[in-house]
Length: 542
Image (cartoon, rainbow, N blue to C red; front, top):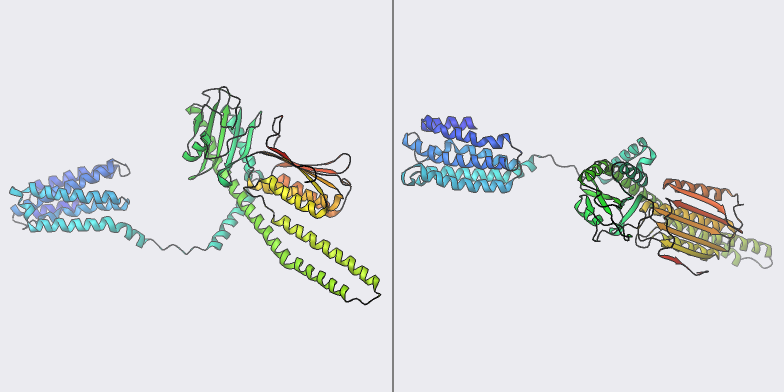
C-alpha cells in the first residue's frame, strides 16, 4: 500500500518533495507492524497512520492543483487509500471501538489538512477534496462495521448438534480413557490423599484438607490429614479465606484458622483454589500452628503442585458424576420395569387365587388350604417386591443427609417385618461426596435387608456416624447370628464388600453378644474426640 500511494502521489503532483509524507507514513506504521500484539503501541501506531494520511491528503491535493495536474482537490485520492490499512487492521482484530475512534480522528485530520494546505483554507473548500474525503470516510465505516459480518458469512455453517451422537462419542472416549488408567486414578479420595502427600514435602502444616463442591453451595471434605479431626468451614457465604479463594480463584493466606472452632494461639493458614479451565472445582487448605508460615515462595511452590492435580481431580469428579447418573437412571429403570411387569402380574395371580377360593365347592377343604397357603406366599412375594422397589428408588436427599435416608429405609422395613429399630446418629454439618453417600446407603440397605430376611431378629440397631472424610455405618441385630449359609445371603455380603472397596472403605462382619450379627462399614480414620457432637439417639422402640 505504501508503494501504491507513493506512485499515485508522484503521478498526481510530479513533486518528489511530496514523497516525504510517504516516508513519514512509513515511520508511523512501524509500531503497529513491529509490536502488532502490544496493547498500547499498536493502537498508537494506527492512530499515527491515520493522522499522517489525512494531513498528507490536504498537502497532496494542494500540490496537484498547483502543478495543474489534478483539478478541484481530487489529488487527495492519491494518498487516502492508505486509510484502509489501519481501519482494516482494527476491524480484523475485532476492535470496533478503536475503528470508530480512528474514523473520528480521520475526519478531524482531514479538516485540519485541508485548512493548512493552501492559503485561506482554499483546499478545504474545493469540491474534489470534500468528495474524496467523504468517499473514504464512508469506505472506512464500511470496513469497520462490515468486517465482522463478512467474517461470519465466510465461516462454514456449524453442523446441527446431534446430542445422542455427541454423547456416544464422549462416552466412548471416557471408556477408553478409564480402561487405560489405573483404577485409583479416577477416585477423588485417592487423588486428594496423594495431593496432600505431595504438599507435605513442599509446605509445612499440622493440618491439611482437600474440599470439593457439593449441592446447596456447600463443600465436602475429600481427604484430610492431621493429628486431630478438624471441623472445616464448608459454606461459601461465610467470611473466610475459603470463600475468598473460591470467589477470586487466587490463593489466600490468613493468620486465623479456617475451621469453625480453634483453641487459639498462633496459626497460619493457606487456601489454594483448584481451578480447571475457568471453573473452581475444589480447594486445598494448609494450616500450621505458627505465624508467617506461608510466604510468597511457599505459596508459589504449592500452586505448582496443585495446578496439575486440578485436572486429575476434575476428571475423577466428572467420572463419579457420570457413574452416579448412570447408576441412578438404571435403578429407576429397573424399578419401573418391576412395577409395570412382574409386580402387576403377581397381583393378577393373587386375584385369580382369590376367585378360585370363592368358587370352591363345599367339602374341598384340602384344596382350600392349599390355595390359602399359595395366596399367603404370593402376598409375601408381592411385599418383597414392594420393598425392593422402595430400595431401588431410595436416594440420599441433598438436604436431608445420609442418616435421614438410612433411617427412612430402616423404619419402613422394620415396620413391615415387626422389628423394633433403634437409631443412633452422629452426623456432622459437613457432607460426604454424593457418590460416597450413595454407596454407604446401599451397604446399609443390604445389611438391614439381610437382618430382616435371614436373622429372625426382634431388634435392629442402626448407628450412623459421619464426620467427613470419616464415616461409619453399623447395623446390628439380635437374631440367630451368622449361621445362615443361603446363597443369596452370601451374594449380598459380596456386594457389600465390593461397594465398600469402591469407596476405599472397610467392611467388618462380627458376631454380636449374646446373639446376632454386626455389620459395619468404615470409611477413613475415626476422629479423636471424647464427646459426641450433634448426636441424636431415638428412644427404644421408635
